[in-house]
Length: 226
Image 1 (spheres, rainbow, N blue to C red):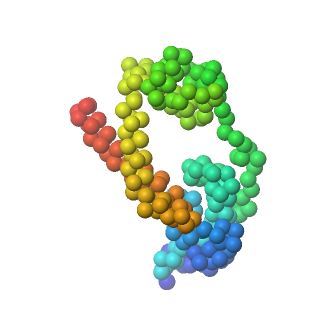
Image 2 (cartoon, rainbow, N blue to C red):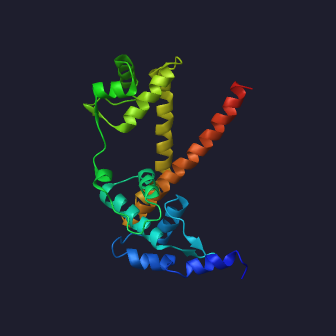
Image 3 (cartoon, rainbow, N blue to C red):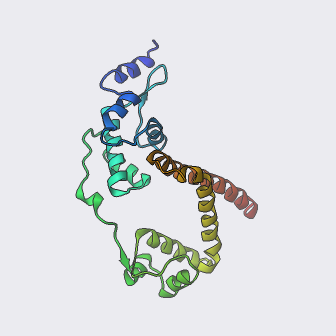
């Protein structure tokens, strides 16, 4: 055994679990957990299992705790992966990952005047965004709407108005329809495993579309600013 491989082998034999052992430990609590989902969590950076010399994954107690917390947040609180990853990374290395009440609080909502003040936006700009179909009229608005309005404020400073951004919204809707079409065979099934697989694949497909868009935008920017 090479000097580099030895430490990895010792770590893997000290309280680390194989995929099968992780499944045996967690599936009584999370019946729909699968080996593919554990691998997906690894791909998304939620866990970083060690690899043996033969290439087998070995999960540390901290990895197992992160998986349990991620599954709990998905199942009980409908958390998205980005928010789960942010929380887990803040508690990296902890074996007993507790869920403080603050993370389970309802996301903040903004009334119209609060939204305008937080985004430093003029009322006319918000009205234009609503007229263009970029923002749905409501009594209160969420953080995502605040982020969008801030982006529209920045674009407006360069003469790009909400009506000019309508095409971007329409392009996103077409991309969502494309992903929905790709996932249709899974979504037509009624078993929980297929639905879970669709939930795993959707963000991956959108990420690949984003990569393609970034390549197209880069090439177009090169033509615009040679």
